[in-house]
Length: 399
Image (tube, rainbow, N blue to C red; front, side, top):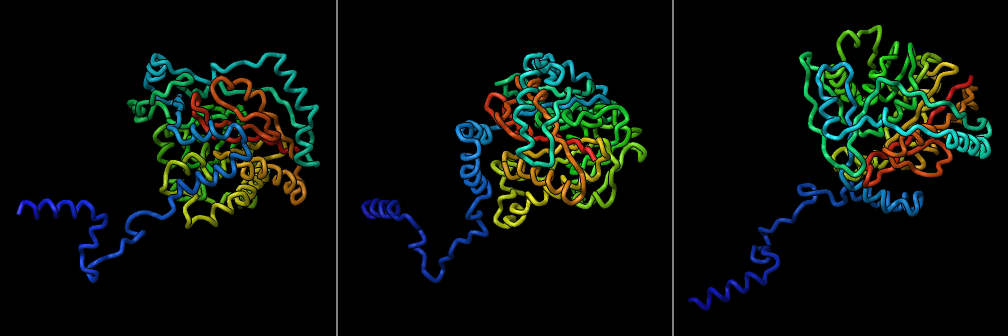
C-alpha cells in the first residue's frame, strides 16, 4: 500500500497538465477574454517607444527609458487662497519653490543665446513665412509657487489638508506641467483661454497668478469638465468663480475659431497626446490599446486643428502656448511647423516663434531639458529629476 502511494505521488509530480487526467468531454479551453489581453497596451507602448525614440533621442534614450519606467516625481502647486500653514511645513521638510529659487541667467549667457538664435535663423528652417525667433525677456508671475524636493530626493508629498473654508492647501502635479503656465506670461487684466483644460492643474496655476481678468476653460469631454469643476471648487473661493470672471464649457475645441475669434490675450493649448508616461504604466484607458489604434494615429491631425483654433481665438498681438506630455517629434515640432504654414495660407495669420531659452536657463537646475531642439523646448525625464516629458512652444500672433 505504501509503495502504491509513493508511486502515485511521483506520477502526479510528473504530470505537467492535470487536464490529462480529465475526460476529454469535460475539458474546457481557457479563453483570453476571461483572463488577460494577449497584447498588453503598456507593452505595445514600450515597443513603439523603443523603435521611435531610440532613433529620435539617440544616446539619451536609455536613460530616459529608465526614468519613464520609474516612479515619477511630483511638485506641490501652492494654493494662495488657502489659509493652511502648509507652506512653512513643506519648507521645513526640505522643499523649495523652484520658481522663486530659479537660477538667473547671466548677461553673457543671455547674449550668447540671443546671438545663437539670431545667427541660426532657426525658424526660417521651419517655415519661410516666419521670421527668426523672438528673444523676449522672461516675465514670471510672483504669485505662482510650486514646491519640489531637491534633485535625487524621491520623498512623497502627503495629501493636502482643507482649511476652515474647505479649500485645499496645494495641488500635486508634475512640476514640469507648471512651465507652460509660466511661459504664457499672463499679466494684469489679461483675458485667457485654456482650450483643453481638464483635469485642471494648469487652470489652477493660471488662477494663482491673480492677474487674469477673465478666464475661459474648455474641455470637449463632459465627464472631464465635471472633474475640472470639482477641482476648482476644492481650491478657489466662490467669489472668484462667478460668471464675470470664469466660464467653463464643453465644446469641441477644434471648432473654437467659429465660436470666438480675435478675443484672447493669451491662449493655452495643452493638447491630448500619447501621454507617454501613462501609456507605459497603466493598461486602463491606454491610447495603445488595440481598440484605439485609429484614435492614436489621428492624434497629430487633432493637435493641428486644436492649435489652429487657439491661434484664431487669440487677438493680434496675443500669444499662444502649445504643450504636450509626449516626446514624439510628430506631435511636437511637427504639429507646430504644420500649423505655422496653415495659419498663413488658409487664414492670413502670420506667427512668430518666441524663444523659451531664458526659461531653460532659469530652471535648468530643477529640470533636465532636451538639447538642440530647433523649435520649442522639452523637459525629458531623468532619474535625478524625474519630471516630464513636457514639450512647450510659444507663438506670437502678428496679424
